[in-house]
Length: 267
Image (cartoon, rainbow, N blue to C red):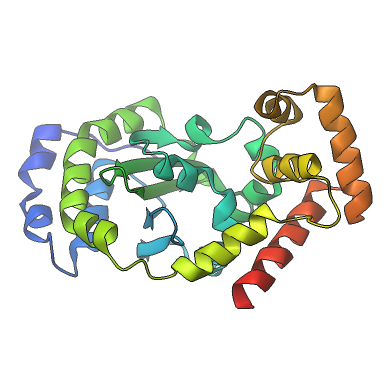
């Protein structure tokens, strides 16, 4: 995918419709139109990540049809493993590639294979928008394998338009998302408990910690650093986890996790 010529001043001169759409139902679509006018993108959607609530899909009009089912599945549990959500909750902001925020072993994780590789995404960039310390918005943009990764020029354009895009999004959604009644809080608590208790009654507390970090995409080295233990000890815990859960791969670990949180969410 070839990036078209870009003139920031000209782009800004055409953004009056975006500002005028603040507070209206067509704002999300206008926001994506503005971003697409700056950088060619294959797929994009906007998600709100607020603490103690499940993610809220705010705009999915630019999602590939084959990804819609995966997004619905993401919203009922797997989001707990999402590094983009974690970055939003931590208050990070700006233009960030997936590699900038994900654990070091993320691309080898079953989560990555399930939600990225399976649909041919070659690269993802997010504009993270902080909501006054109460979580944030993620405008996630992807390119398919046939179009290659985002080049440095495309990232520079996104960084140039991010201040206006972020300000408009905060004005449109900020108060509603931060001051809302917190729909879905009970469901989120159930799912979070299921994640924290994954392997309970079977794994030791330390083995469960290791399992959760592996699910989130941490390598053995990263797990060792996070828990202040040696990589050899991590290897022992991995073997114990596999033996106790009757599994032989990370894919099977992921499947058991999905089954656990799904059962919790519908209980």
